Image (tube, rainbow, N blue to C red):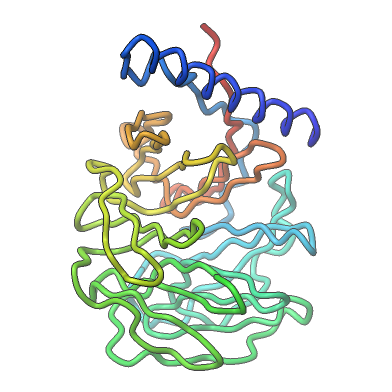
Length: 299
């Protein structure tokens, strides 16, 4: 399964490069003519025992999934939030694995420490012991949201309501970017840049990690939430929290692969299992995590 998926992705990449070459010769620029079309096909979903799941993260070392449950209120310090453990096939193994949080959202994993964004503080969890080991208050925080781990244990995380990106490094939290942001949410590191999906700006952008220069990649992505790399260079999946998932192509054009807002189902902070080609989507008020296979669409 793993090898076949890798071969499939490389095959698609070669098709894309070949198509690009032919289009270049003919002077064509149409996305449909250059790139294959993809679709998302449901493969499993959890029982509806989760309580407002916001984010899902794969722990390769321990072969399991972590899911944050904010339990209704995204900004309230009510102490009823928790993290669950799921198997890779969607079985809820431990619903209330770690409690003692309020509205946990985005996560990042650094070795055996799970970082969780919880309203106005970082929560550090020992994943071996299943215990909270530290809580770090973030001064002036309004609603901490998504996060991503970079090199040497550096963790970047957003404050959507305050319009900031913070950084955790060597045990300390500081501001990283405080200007030019409009409701930043989802984060992903891509080489020397930090990709940002924004709810306020409804856009998908890249920020240079060295110069902090902001560049628009794609607009009109709705209330931008999760970002994942597909495994095909320059291609990303971006979710609109209200219920839509977009595929961003290397030429920065986009297509909608999934629309669930008409069904009243959200699409929050994503995870992508590249070896299997499976996208994991927390449905927020739907109280489930749904897995979709990303595959080339039949003609």
